[in-house]
Image 1 (cartoon, rainbow, N blue to C red):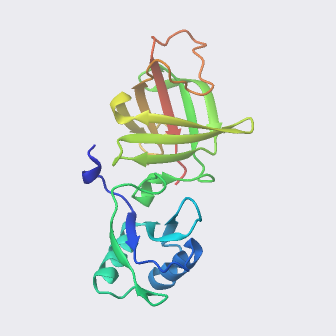
Image 2 (cartoon, rainbow, N blue to C red):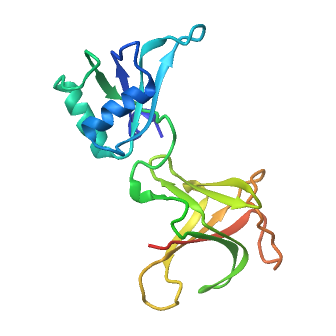
Length: 217
């Protein structure tokens, strides 16, 4: 996707007083926009003496906070340490993550990642499972990222939309209840590793992998 068309939660900020540090800017913006509205702040500095260059970037937690900040800047209502902050949109986030908070399933959300093969159209043979998985669904970047903790290490599984053949919502109780799981059938390109997934049943063709993510809502 062309970065000029990508939706982000980050803005470029200029006219930052040189005496200000990132924490000062974060505190000021949260006092204006509300606590928890700011996700990340960076102020660019000189390489040799680390002096502030007077500009940087701010990443918001949600689109509404970004829109409000842009509006306040346009109205010259962001007076910070005697300077009116100037804000404009950025096409790259400081830290890549989903724009829509509903697409962020964080640790402790009760999510489970199951990897295996389909033995029937309505039954999946489980090869490996991981509890407490963090999952980020990013349609703006056409991919899904899953973070798996395994034996004291954290691994990231990245699935590009182009590698997914089919996606279905399903119910774990097998009935007509609410959808509480996502079944993805996809292709794992050569050179990529799906953590801990072994074809013990001997039913996978080369490159095939089936993943089910269970969500606790």
